[in-house]
Figure 1: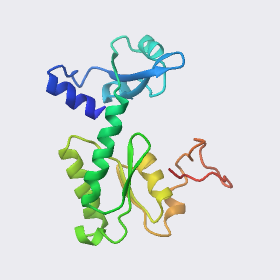
Figure 2: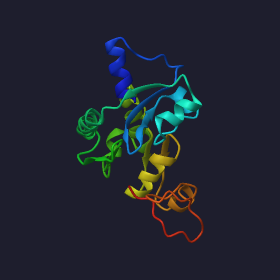
Figure 3: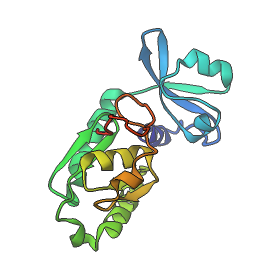
Length: 184
């Protein structure tokens, strides 16, 4: 969404922030919502829902076509750009990155300072971020996807920080004895 909003602003056709906006892709039964702005989320618009159903709930919803190939290319460029913090980076799905910062946090003043710098630099590019650091990829993935905006999970804290988050890929809420593992 942020890449599209930046492009629309450059074209002089940006939607005001207080109007609900969704980017759509083709689904099995017509267009489905791929991404939303804050106003659309506050109006109850949800990713994955059919556009026709969401327009019934929110007649003011503005809909534009998503550019999935452009998003993928932009994410790949961003992945290369993030190598300023560590040498090993990969994309994670259509909207995430994984960085192995093992041994590099101290170069930036520690984990808190590293995450703060990441947020600031990404914000400077016009991107919002939800960042997490943890002893395992799975824990970091779950915290980044479902936790607070910035989270640091120290070794041994995984059990107390992760239980309230849904497991992937099933989406169930973790319950005692659940064998699902949150891993991206």
